[in-house]
Image (cartoon, rainbow, N blue to C red):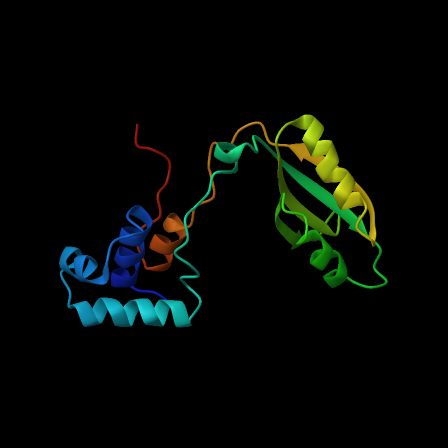
Amino acid sequence: MVIDQLDARLIDLLTAEPRVGVLEASRRLGVARGTVQARLDRLRARGVITGYGPDVDPAAIGFRVTAFVTLEIRQVAGHDPVATRLAMIAEVLEAHTITGQGDMLCRVVARDNTDLQRVIDAIVDVPGVVRTSTVIALAAPVGYRTLPLVLAAAGHPTSGPPAP
């Protein structure tokens, strides 16, 4: 297993309180400071923990529209040149190569629907993009999260539907 129960508890604590220090984390988890530091170092080295930066809500800084844009691209040069250009568009938050009805899927944000048109136009202008299809998100009843996955990977029973 990549992580164990202590790793999961440490990640849970850091998720709830990202600014907690190593000493305080060791106190709350009931383990030595060196143990917490060693666990953090190992989790970072293995790529389990990828950062400690602040989570930013795009809506809170004026980007209230979230959309998912499926791209069809010319396969001659591959995905990399397209991905490199997409990374230059600030409103493109993620880009994934996919199977199915398209070649890439992007999560994008915009200030409003008119601004979304500008973002889509910028994506269509990327050399190699043939066409796009856009779906606007209305709500996010389950936001991006990893803690339930971490807990499941550490052997915690997965949550099922709520008890009646």
